[in-house]
Length: 197
Image (cartoon, rainbow, N blue to C red; front, side):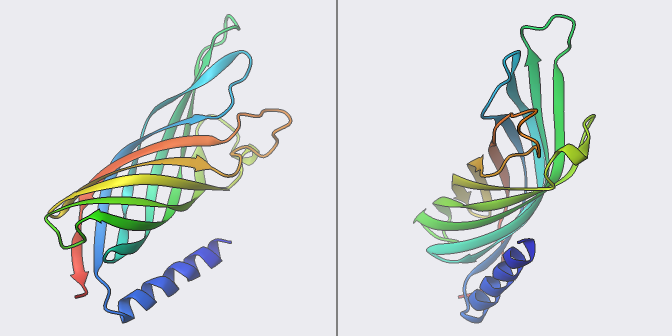
């Protein structure tokens, strides 16, 4: 599946480049908050601040395609409400997130001084590490979909998106079912144009 995603991204990039599309490299850094759709009977999950660093390549003008890759650290706190003697626990998850975005410039375009964009897409998250828990109990890859908005000021941009996972993080949902993850991503960076008309 990952091979197909990478091949589709490369094919789209090549077709856009051949058509003299506008291309911009977009390094970025930001923060995120993640929680889960289900809480156990003895407590609840609360999203805490994590971070991401990486970048994307935007290809196109009014409508654009934007594949990317980010190193992501997500943190969720499990708050134990009903069981005395048990401490709250942090779930620290890190991995590689690969978003594949399709966007539309609502105001302006890649060359404008100020722009407003709407976008959405699908993403893959590849688990690298989960602190204090057995990594074998979790799926190596999970898939998601997201929607967001971006604002451009000359070469600087700020984006916010909300992602819903399509697959469960854990393997055995009979023993522990925390549901699907939900994440808010906010990041900022710069646009570096490298070609196009």
